[in-house]
Length: 194
Image (tube, rainbow, N blue to C red; front, side):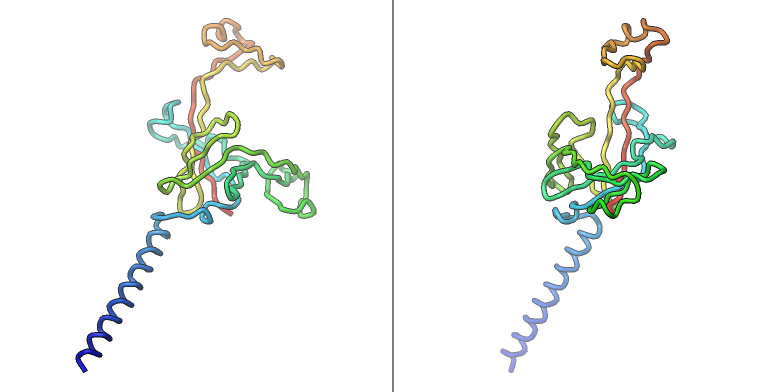
């Protein structure tokens, strides 16, 4: 009889231990502990963007919206990050649609590859396909993703269609009102998974 009680007791301990492990795993996933590719794959819409105090993506985040998130639609598929085809309505709002017949506006159907991606230590590591002004690490959040969008310091020549703007601040400022020197800037951009 004691042999059977030991066997029943061991079975109960094993069942309880397995349930605890499953609960711990579910809690870790829900709390951002462990992610899989399926947690990342999907379509994301821009939610907010705020400038850092410094152009190197350091310091406090400001409280005024930077605007980089507006009408941003990104799509993660099995291994690539895209600007996907979108529908643009009369108010210039962009919405992702699989089928052009679902669009009540202008349908822009070209996928634009931005990067390949992989999960590394619960972050998304991007490998740009072309030059891309975002960090190579994307943080997964409870509702989507966050990344840094950085802009190098540059001269902005509004009337220069040939892109012959000077590269140095001194040369840019020498052009007077024809150009404007812009300091480096960095914003944290948040996107929500749909």
